[in-house]
Image (cartoon, rainbow, N blue to C red):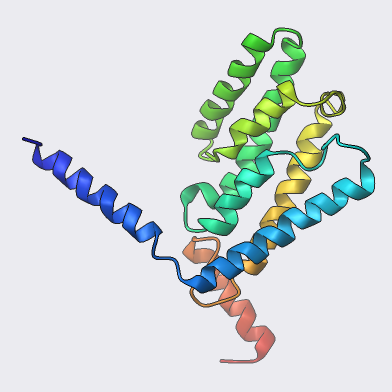
Length: 200
């Protein structure tokens, strides 16, 4: 017989999974639009400044981040601190590990991802796609590796800021969506909105 604790955990899991399916159809529209614009801007920058199939600016981990910041906006992993901090920290660690062990991929790859996880935990910036950002610094193309620590600034920092600004815009379009989830932000946001609109 399962213990009461296991039963409670089971009921809680069922509730969470059920709740995840209760997404209003309007949410799909804003999730789609935010993700389309955010990734679209990055893809446009990629097409303008980089030629060929070498995706320097449009790194894969940005796609994973889009799922979080546009699709699961209330998740702790989706918040601005986690989005920006997680990617930047992971990128820095990935580049550092690559410089220390550039030719030993079986050590560099797991070490970069594992250290990225630990440092994101320590700094409370855990963002799952950050692991991919660290890994890309190890296994990415020659152009990405040639960037060195500039990889941390561009594409990583600049790219995450583009995703963040887009999320701040499209995730606050309706009263049912609020991003980030921190209440202090929304107090200031509504004060500024009242001043701009002249409403009391």
